[in-house]
Image (cartoon, rainbow, N blue to C red; front, side, top):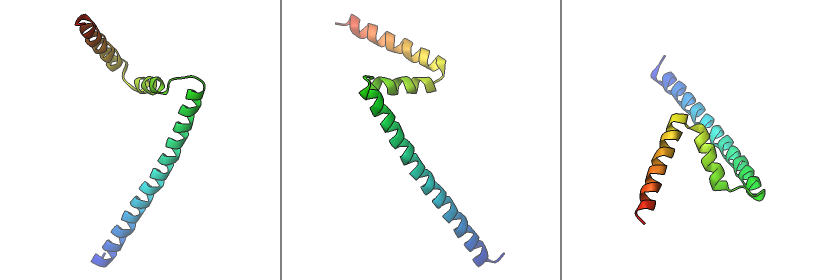
Amino acid sequence: MTDNTSHRVAADELCQFVERVERLESEKAGVAELIKEAMSEAKARGYLSAILRKAIARRKMNPDDVAEGDAMLDLYESTLNGSR
């Protein structure tokens, strides 16, 4: 392969990567809009969007990490409530 040919192959490959990422970014924007609509619908039905987001985030976490975080939050809250 000559330098010119390898340069052309690299350029084609680079273009393919860029176009793929652009396509995925477009899909990501569409999914973000669908999530926004779902959260708006939940809010219209009386659910608190901030709490829903926390619940969704916690479901993604390892149960041990959730338990540890809960324990630390309890400790912090009891410490702060005791200092009042």
